[in-house]
Image (tube, rainbow, N blue to C red; front, top):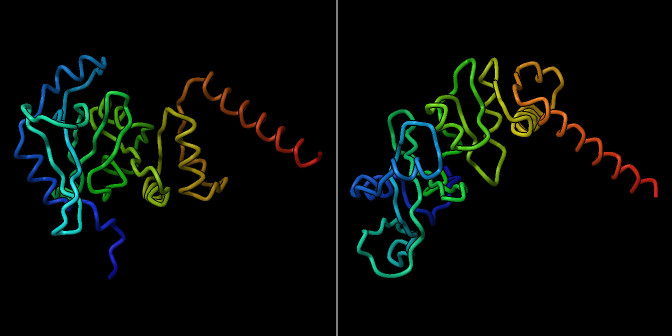
Length: 207
């Protein structure tokens, strides 16, 4: 069967060995600096992706503190384990952007009949790593996995309705699965923006 993964990216086993082989920086200080009220997890690392001519694949490298040369600022690295197997490593930057090492994991967390859907990986971490967070930036295909949940709780209306649209085909009957506990201001702002968008496009169509 043809692989659906990018075969130029590092393999999970290689990333896991590199991750386990380095102590990493002070995660507690990183959490405190960003005012994150959660138990620290993962490691703080500086990493690179180096092209390996022998394998035609990128090699994942964690730089030692005494490394001299170009390298990214330290980022929080969180291992993603599925069924007891290491599959990916999530990086979260100081700007709260995120990326993955192997691009094999579309989700953080595990599905339950009643599941909390988080808008961002840090929300998942601050919840005590409960619920799920979609971390695939280019595809919404995995949102169909939410069909396995009877109830989907979400405190971000944009995230909830995006999941409803892509995961359930915007089926009105399926919207009952969602419990959206965002703030009234955010919910009102969302629908006001939708009305403005629809009005603008209607005016363009009529002109």
